[in-house]
Image (cartoon, rainbow, N blue to C red; front, side, top):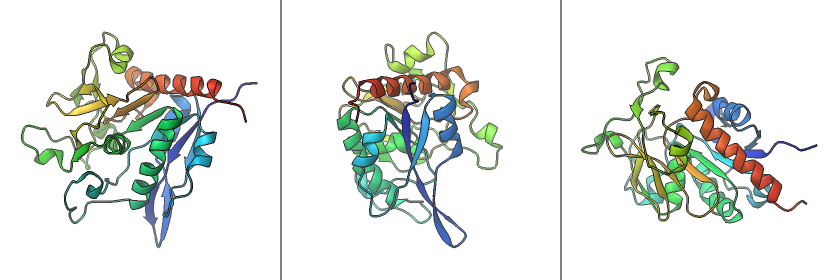
Length: 252
């Protein structure tokens, strides 16, 4: 009997009380199950990092999640950080170590929000540390005092590149997405191809070079994934890529 593909999700460091915990958002885990039709596996990101090769050899896909932390600016020549800018050095070290290995293996990767930014930086790109301070760009942050359904509700239209993966998922239906981020792509990483932009021109999605599945999105398609056909289509495409990888990889 066939088994569901196995998708790895990295953890984030979070203090709870007096102790550090490794956590992952339930909405991402649920989207792997309900959207991609896969089995989630939480990957503990420690500092120093654990060897990634043993994990990656067992996986059929990798979901780089969003997080409350930001990538440390020194990874993309972003200048000094600032007081109150939340960082997670363990996640930085782990993801920037395992991502090149995953891509070399052809492992399908879906990257969301922080994960989207991680992929861009891994490909040599840079970020706007504060999108809202860049002339000509809108404020893409959510209102933290609003209910979650409002924070993650439709916020702006998505301008899809004709012939792209996301355009194929959306079909002829206009698409609007949520916007819950303070940072964004400044210089696109080498070889990455734009899939979508926000109305202000900010890159909202890209795909990777080559035939493998690498899709990064700045918005949050994991939110109520079964209720939004476009979001669901993204996770279904990821799930299909994971199943193809599972069938093709050598059996141990």
